[in-house]
Image (cartoon, rainbow, N blue to C red; front, side, top):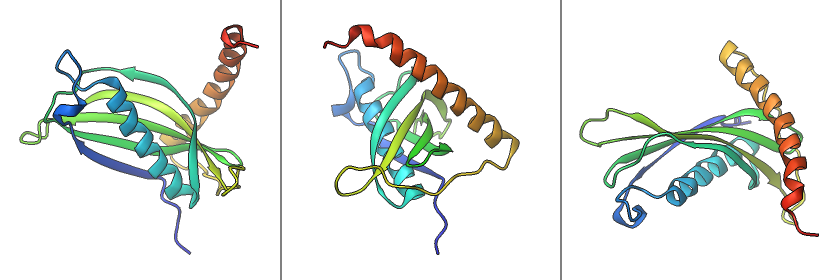
Length: 159
């Protein structure tokens, strides 16, 4: 049996249609790339079709210029019964120099679902290295924080 794939890197060239009025790649394009990488990572781990359940903590650190080579690195840092927490990092560089720089990072939660949209069981990911254990612990802390934020956000949800 094939081993689940824990991480993936997708590469894109920032094209003129990705640029906003300020001349930089707009956040929506970056978020699309993040979602694509999160899906590919989650599907590779679970062997299932997956949907986005949450995207948060997105931090735009530096702009991306048109013509840049963009790398979106995604890796599983926590698994539930059907969910996968994916840590993502976006780096960009001039393709001629390959001097990469961090531009964006975030967490996305993907859920494996069947053809009826119902959650499906996935393989458990068990952290082994110190870095993996730390990221796994952080993912658990973030779950608690998201629950609290969700409760606070209810004030904005119409009945």
